[in-house]
Image (cartoon, rainbow, N blue to C red; front, side):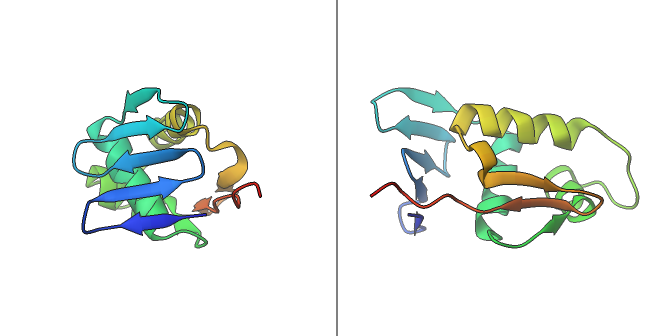
Length: 109
């Protein structure tokens, strides 16, 4: 399940709801967390482009404002942080030599 409620500025994925205004994460077990500004920008970009491989250069340009060929591990670290904070597992994957893709796993039925 993936539900986007732009009127309220929230994105719901299995087990979590992320507030796009302030980065607050509400887990289904009542725990809470928060995404930092860049993590939130990265999350929004990935979710809005789900099921599409987003090139590293596009992510670096849109989230960090970096143009051209930039060699940085910053993106990889932020992706790792998102996986851990949001318990995304294999939903957020690297595509070798290309970029990243977000493919949400279907909710358990």
